[in-house]
Image 1 (tube, rainbow, N blue to C red):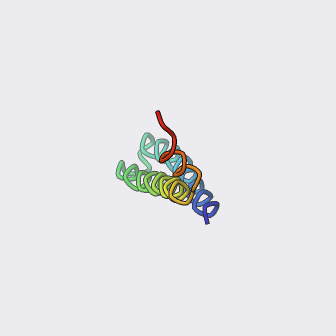
Image 2: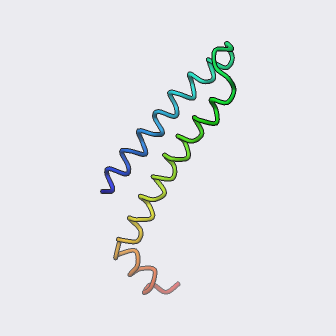
Image 3: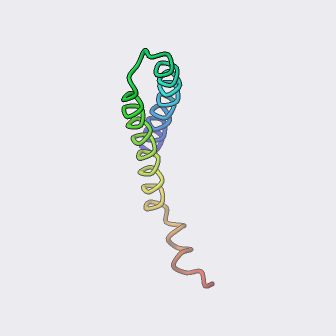
Length: 74
């Protein structure tokens, strides 16, 4: 499950990079409207959100982290 979330988020982030570069070229050459940056930002936020969910799920399921955070004295 974690690998699926991670791969999906990396796909979204890779798509964001590709589309963002084409958007910059398209807007500077007046082929695309400036609103394309809004749509590319949505891909960025989806990718980052999926990575955050993956990290949060891993942290919740990891018993070792919970043990050390409760039992280690500072």
